Length: 409
Ligand SMILES: [Zn+2]
Image (tube, rainbow, N blue to C red; front, side, top):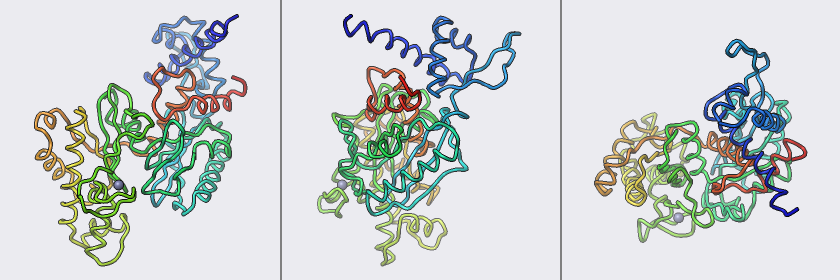
């Protein structure tokens, strides 16, 4: 028997499982008969696929049968009682961990927060112990975890290669390190990409295939979805608009260069400007709270930050022609008029036809939703990988996650 004929039946059954899962993901809970109708797969094949997905912990059945067209039938839904996934968001000052069912609904009562430590070993210890607490507490099987991280993640090696704002992660493969400690599949996802996934699954980009996401936080990051796929570059390093030089002799940037866009646009640029104004160093949170409470007048600093941000937004619009550009950032909470001023400045900077084609809106999704969306995507792809996998997915990790869930696949 050649190797292809040995592989084919398994691959076909995985493709059927994937179709069943996709049908329930997009249309909601339904009976086996409805799955067969919506997916065009025969009833016996649907039954086999459902059994495998129930065993893997990706689906579960409603407890009591409901009457569907006069006949009792159990509804299938994405697992929420039996299984959970974890999302970890790493940021310059604070990290957060959340859990969710396979439907992506975050358990809001159990968000765990910790200060970003100053060494990688500490970060790994805390992240592992928090994850173990989540895994022990819920009584649900934990199918996997995604880690939203700032900076550059080489997706060919799954290593954090340059993180100007959380440099303790540099050279480390946090996904693999946590996988070996926790025994579940863990993947790293670049934070701007996490925001794209959150917006596509839970926010305003449902069904939008061409959009960009400018993440204005400690740094300035960019995620790009074109033709429904994340644009990644060769090693997953694409989209680093924050490190384009905009001031030749500007301030030193965390990347080693000077005068980068994120030294003048974004939260930490604003905090730096406010610190200079006050003559003492203040954090981003402190600067924003001083502005919101009216204790300081930082209109000039905010306007300057917004004008530079508009340079970045205009560059994205001119280069990528997105139908929608989402802007994510706490900065805009400081003053209600700030977002509108930034859009006006963008109108002056961008090419008029490109600007006219693009909606600029504030993002609704969060990085924690993005981490959850990423791990659900990763488990779904683990059932049967698509030909064009998204950049942060590693097949080895996906299968490891499923092996954990099923024991024997
Ligand atoms: Zn830089």
